[in-house]
Amino acid sequence: MPNEGADAGVMSLIALSAVVLALVAAAAPPPAPEVPYVPTPARVVERMLDLAGVAAGDVVYDLGCGDGRIVIAAVKRSGVRGVCVEVDPTRLMGSRLNARKQGVEGRIRFVERDLFKVPLHEATVVTLYLLPEVNARLRPRLLAQLRPGARVVSHDFDMGDWKPDEMATDTGSMIYLWRVPAR
Image (cartoon, rainbow, N blue to C red):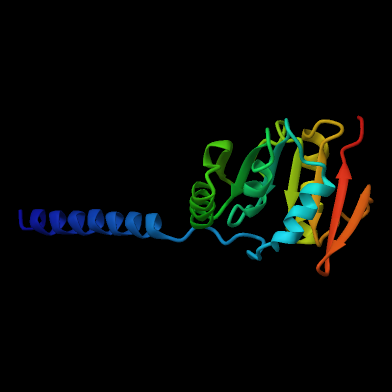
């Protein structure tokens, strides 16, 4: 039975290859986000929150939260809760650390997930700094899942033919606000 040793060697090589492939797959970086990370200036963050009328009782979702600055600023307002949604685990970890440093981590839920797969029903305010094509793809979900009167505020990019209820400028940035209409 001279083939038994060769067969065992081949089987060992196949098993080792499977382990190596599994390790490589586990170590692979997460998928690249559709939108590059560009932080919103602090003044623009405050203007976005003011334009949306963020106040006690609001639940602010930031889709593609990056370092968490928008939600962190929102939950510093009395009675506001926030949700940071980010596909990049490293960025989400950074937003959690930033919230901890600011003493507001307990008022924020951190969700590592594709923004197109996160349920939005709880949100009263959704903040965005996404590209126009991403906003356009997101619009049907916003209209379907958000309650009438919920606010959507976007830094720099509009929603195509969904005309904003209000617009503002700050430090050269455009800020758009939409209110979800009654169904």
